[in-house]
Amino acid sequence: MPCHICETCGTQHAPGPLPPARCMICDDDRQYVGWSGQRWTTPTELAARHHLRVETDAGLLGIGIAPDFAIPQRALLLPTGAGNLLWECVSLVEDAALTALRARGGVDRIVISHPHFYSAMVDWSDALGGVEILLHESDREWVLRPSACIRWWGGDELRLSDDVTLIRCGGHFPGSTALHWQDGPRAGGALFPGDALQVVMDRRHVGFMYSYPNFVPMATGDVRAMRDRLARFAFEDVYGYTWGRNIIGDARAAVDASFERHLRAVAA
Image (tube, rainbow, N blue to C red):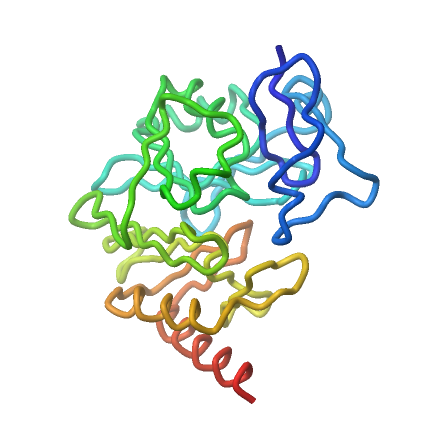
């Protein structure tokens, strides 16, 4: 039986003879149902219309879907002290991408920031030999294709190694997670925040939204809490959710300025 994939958010659902009646991720007010109504595809149909884009993005191997499909995020391979981490996930798996990952030592663990990027995480885990998928337990209800490979973590921080820490930022989703890589990929380290804070189009700031497509601001208390949780982490770069949406150099100062700009604006 196929695992149907929502055309709007790209989330793969549990196997079934027919597509679900609804996608709960798109029904949620952080997302939206496509203007043509709820539509579904399958891995086979998706592969017939799309392929994977495998190339570097600011020095890291990236994997995304071309032409764009659903939310156009890309995954990144992070060769860290905690092993080779696949940060984020996409809705399509292809042999060429698996070959590229294996040529770089494979993947030890998949880590995903929040439910909008769960996509085909179980297919990716299976294709990579059943590697662990690490998710925050606060977002457990949004897993629409369960797997024994999923490992839940809790609290506000999880240290994976001397150079890698997961930080529960909250705000966008209760479990929205950022990954801090102290030693890479360049000197000074990097932050990978998913949509917890999002690199905006000027690539000099980040934004804070409860819903990005529906333009609902993040609650001020959540923004302040995120600022507090990130305060002790140094980083030179921020890698955003999609191709080229990165702040390379002086990113810590850019994030600090963005917190101040946002809080000043909502208090005006």
